[in-house]
Length: 236
Image (spheres, rainbow, N blue to C red):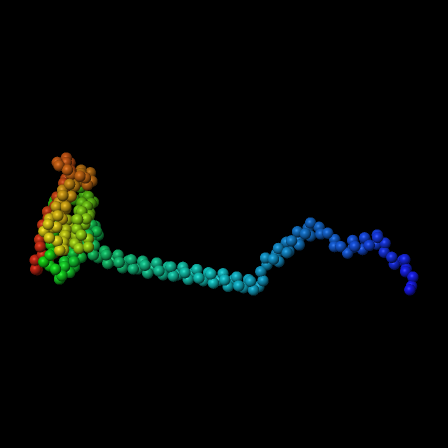
């Protein structure tokens, strides 16, 4: 065995130097921040496949929103056209001022009732007395308010699903009563007369209660007649 060469022996100082050389050098603060930023960027940076998928998804979402918007717009247009048609139909059968049926609608109602059961058909003819004087004294705007009030009155006392109230022209009205006996007809007449006789026009044109001999109030009075339908009768 050859002798051990002391020249190859590592001293403790040599071991400490070698270990220190093998350890990595500590990073500066700037190098740490740079490494963190690079790692963060790489973590969030999407791949080309991710970019393509996200682009397709965004495009599809946009197309769906656009399609939905067009569908909503089309639905609204159809709804508006439908309502427009209904408004035309309603306006052709309703008196514009009072909201009651007009003469054409009353004639149609009368024809239908005559075909079914003319024996139980009663018609009332009503007009407002001295209506021209109301217009001349207080103006047509006040006259219109009187007409609208009277229309609401007769509209409340009839049966909506069976009877009809209509404005013939000017201050003239029709009331058609179907299947009512004499007591019911009298009840309708009394209700109309009782209410209209309690209303008047004040000097300033307002509709006010007209109880007793109210000073400065012009009472609203009406003429009204009821007849049972007879063959050949018309609303002309």
